[in-house]
Length: 619
Image (cartoon, rainbow, N blue to C red):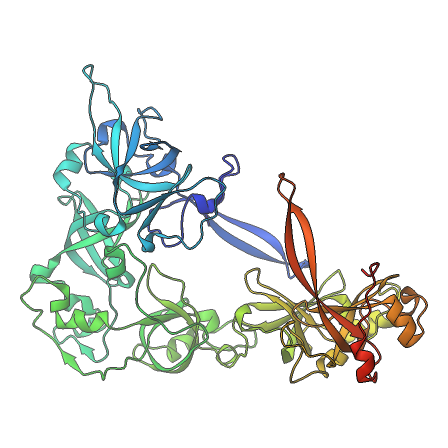
């Protein structure tokens, strides 16, 4: 994650945009112990990696002597002026205001934003450059003029599109003559590399005139083991398909730097098409929740997981390849052409096989996921790994057959049967497991149909609660409110709500007909009346005047309690216009609010339903 800079006061969406392809630096990897499921007795370790896009960190290995025309450096817009932008590069030996970006040096369309403006649907894929104070980009040095005394004058910058930057190959002669070191290497650089030798998990390469050595992992080769591949020359490495590709003229290829650690001297590169083009992968993977049959194991990582090839629409044919082609083009090689069409999903060992103690034996995992084994069913659980272009999946039967995979699968008013209780919270609520990583909260008010004045003081109620909602017990629940973005779900275990309105619960105001009866729970009680809530925060009210006329209730506070279940009839769907003051200009903003006018007299006549009561003092 990237933390917002609290000192600058600039929102994070004014620093970067969705869809941008740019290098980042790892600030720190942290782990903290947090209470599990809201319980102090159970704890879990939460691991996070904090990143940064700051020019001060990304340009830390550069100084002003290493700059040359054509080099790409990270910069932050300091201010937006009439003719362009002042840019900070944070490079040693340079003043903060010596770089300028003219509008005419911006490739494509651009838009100037104020710091208070909202950024809506703007990203690099839409070919529009957003300019505002604090935004970071990778700029290209356009010209470096020098004054008569030899000091640097204002450096002119150029802002290119990702398509243009993706075609620029680093010139080793110019780079090395500018005294560059491994600390000045930055992810995103494109090099001409030479394949030095083959490794069990990929390629070892050299670049910049064999000054640097790096590796291309098997995940970054742009393809995976083709079905039916055989290497007659080396039978002991039948899964190392890249040995039949990167030979002859194909030992010289272009690769993009994706990671570098100057301390450990670790350098990683990639030749995946979307990495080379610096774009979001265009491959259409199955949607999250999709179930796929007959996937093939193409790699086994003992004790960690397995890589599975998704079935292709094309019929696989057996290959016995010795000739790698004559053209200096990877796709001209038949093995690589077949490997590039293989799309894969990765299953972690924890989600591979159901186990009573939640630990899968490595021997059983290795046997079931041996190379080229067919996996009967898998389920896609994530497709956000754009870097490797590999989706995540699960093969455990409990996950494959689960009705809920993410919070987006939940619906207000839906009933979920036999969900396990995973924790009893100190607040009196209960936490249940709805699906893989999907938890729901049952507030204390929704554990029983009838509410009591004090849950803590009722020993019998607490005894029943501890027995009924013991960890591991399975119960039926119904979804009240779901917030997918916040990953929150509020449930009810009230039998009166679970057993009523099964086919057509009230989940939205539109479509509610006058005279309809429905069951809800009391969410508010006051002298002015009561509020009844249904699902998806749809609610209605019954004024104290109506309660007195229909039910003879003199004081709603005495006769009703929050949490009680009631069956009511819809008398009218009212739209109330509310006015509220916004900003400091004393301007009034109007907003329509919909409220249901309800009645507890379920047998009222049609003539009585036509009479609408209004009460200015109603809450």
